Length: 252
Image 1 (cartoon, rainbow, N blue to C red):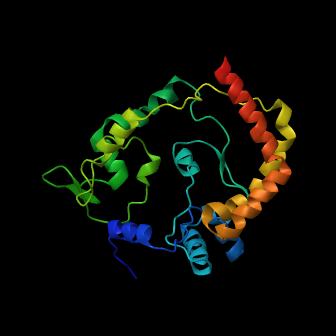
Image 2: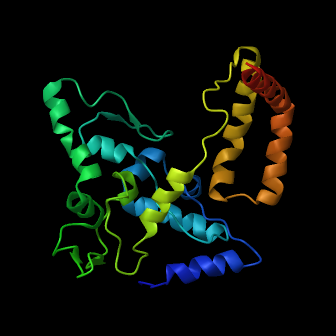
Image 3: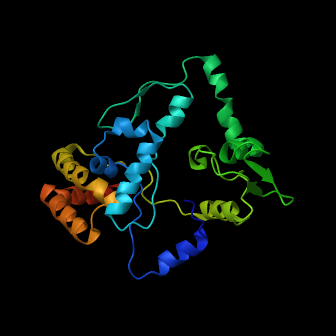
């Protein structure tokens, strides 16, 4: 069954809603629900959909997202990728080893300089997956082009879709150009005196992060519990040391 939805209206309604719903950005909790492994899920698009469905059925989610795994692009370009049952795929070696291989990477330059090439990668081939309107916007002809555009390259040369805001990326560019740099640029935290506390805090975060990032747990209870355990693990000591070093950084 295909359901069409005006996304602008959906976003507006979601923002106005008094009771908010989570929008899980990862599919991994679905693995535990369905009883599969990470390795099985990343190799099977249908299984990813089942994991997304399992999360949506168990929790009051506002949207469903597919697995984000950039190793797919790395492997497509020829990088070796290691798979395991419990961890996300890992790129294990460099892609470029000599001048000839470096020359082949000009495709990445095209991706960030050639608007037509960028459009083709994002929307599919012209006349098959999309076509250009008279005003230069893109009209999609099909919905089965499966290479996510956000993984490819710059958006500033990407043609907007016919139903989108034609000035959207110019607005983003203006925001980037007017952004103010952080006053802490150049600061690097020395963790020598807080290694144990950081390790303990990472252990606590690993315990809670999947549920918190995906909305699998109620934040009203999960966030206070996580904070309490982080403090017990030494979070305040880490903050105190970091603040001390920041103060010294500005003093110098």
